[in-house]
Image 1 (tube, rainbow, N blue to C red):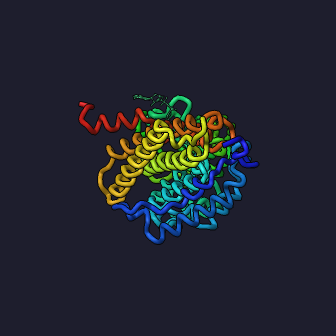
Image 2 (cartoon, rainbow, N blue to C red; image 1 turned 90 degrees about the vertical axis):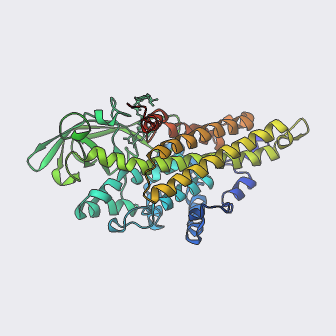
Image 3 (cartoon, rainbow, N blue to C red; image 1 turned 60 degrees about the vertical axis):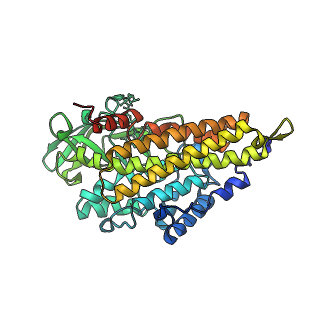
Length: 408
Ligand SMILES: Cc1cc2nc3c(=O)[nH]c(=O)nc-3n(C[C@H](O)[C@H](O)[C@H](O)COP(=O)(O)OP(=O)(O)OC[C@H]3O[C@@H](n4cnc5c(N)ncnc54)[C@H](O)[C@@H]3O)c2cc1C
């Protein structure tokens, strides 16, 4: 296939990969992913992705951010409220939210789009769960409607994996907190209207951490855009708080409960990232199958070379294992079982599958796989963050090792 296979917008969309975007779900024990309602949701997301995202995705990648109008459209379609409690204006469960991300990627979107468009999935669940009615009305409902953007601010220049080491300080002063410190690598941070921020209200360690919602238009808040390897359409910021006065009514839950709230929500975030990892892998399998069937070398299609066929078979196998495992853990997590160990292992399994698959997808595309604007090239760059964000691969292994009794 020649460079003409790359369309004017730069998207590489072989017909067969497009067909694959809405493939029938394999009939299995995992029926929860294929109920009539969820099939309808898939079709809605596939249509939304095709009409509202794909025509402009390359431009947003170049511009470094998604437009607010996309949030409004997603809000109007009811895609942002999925997985939130009804008391906060939500509907459905976390599987619905993950299915939306999965289908968006299978339809030619990306984990970068998911990061930017669904940042609320990490930004406001704490408020929905522990906030009072006024906080929910003020901070959660507008975000679920797509009329406001929320971020989560935990990571600092000197504290990432070690959340308990954060130093951003919130000192009580009358009816306000006065916040001083910095956050970094904050997804949607250049556009966010509100940031659910981990602050230190007490002494050292995890018990001194609270969650405070900080509106970004408050005096003393400044932010700068960070450039990065992938997720180009998802803006990332460093935030600085220089004596920012925030009403004490913005505190989410009680003082000192921030760390626990963060850890509870990590489970949903990790599941979501695991789903994005296997979905990215599946999309790259689909794109690679279309490519190797069409691309001719030495007089025959790549798909006829045994070494190529076996690589594609391995890509499909690794993806299937990841999908099956992640969905199984999701089902057990939703049933209320303790899946801490499996969740960490499932994220690592999905990330490893994704890393291996995107690498082989680029290799099998040859020079075309290295070209900017070709879809597998974007997935290759985007995939690299999945083993870093939401708890690194090493931290996941630490969780597993601890549960295996190696701490003693
Ligand atoms: C694109 C992007 C978006 C992000 N979005 C957000 C966001 O919206 N909000 C937010 O708060 N944060 C966000 N982050 C931050 C992300 O969560 C952190 O980068 C991540 O948790 C790792 O922290 P760190 O970068 O400080 O690395 P470090 O904690 O410094 O770790 C560096 C390396 O050491 C390893 N390591 C650390 N501790 C151990 C240990 N005990 N044993 C073995 N190995 C160890 C790590 O696995 C890693 O390989 C984002 C990051 C990126 C790149």
